[in-house]
Image 1: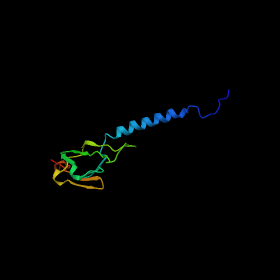
Image 2 (image 1 turned 90 degrees about the vertical axis):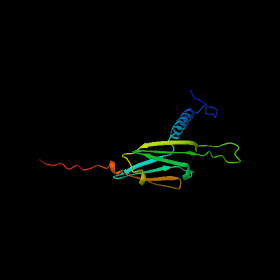
Image 3 (image 1 turned 45 degrees about the horizontal axis):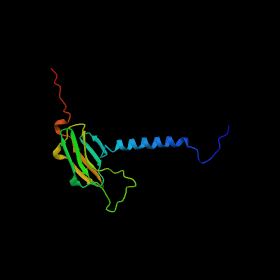
Image 4 (image 1 turned 45 degrees about the vertical axis):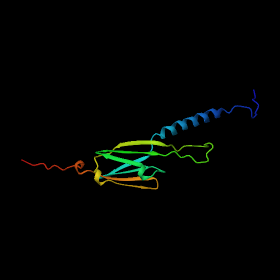
Length: 141
């Protein structure tokens, strides 16, 4: 039996495309909960952190460190153009955020340096003296 080729048939791949779009939307919404995106890496005596905070002012970013834990919090302001009639696409979120991380060791809070440049927060956190490994001499008897 032959099926006539017309433009009136249902595309079998359309439902798969719809499923793929829905899965992408779910994964994108899951990633929005992890703002700001952060990289943390360590050297022998220093922890370095970068956090993407586009469109924010340094005064609106609060960072606190206690022992081996760092906390970054703030609020992204809602962006609404004055002559907006309707959104075509809106992916940039707004609202309060809070992220906390455990660092690989205690840091010296008095020696931390932080700068904000081009929407990225850069932090250098030196290791606290008390958390550095100490060599213990073993005496022979």
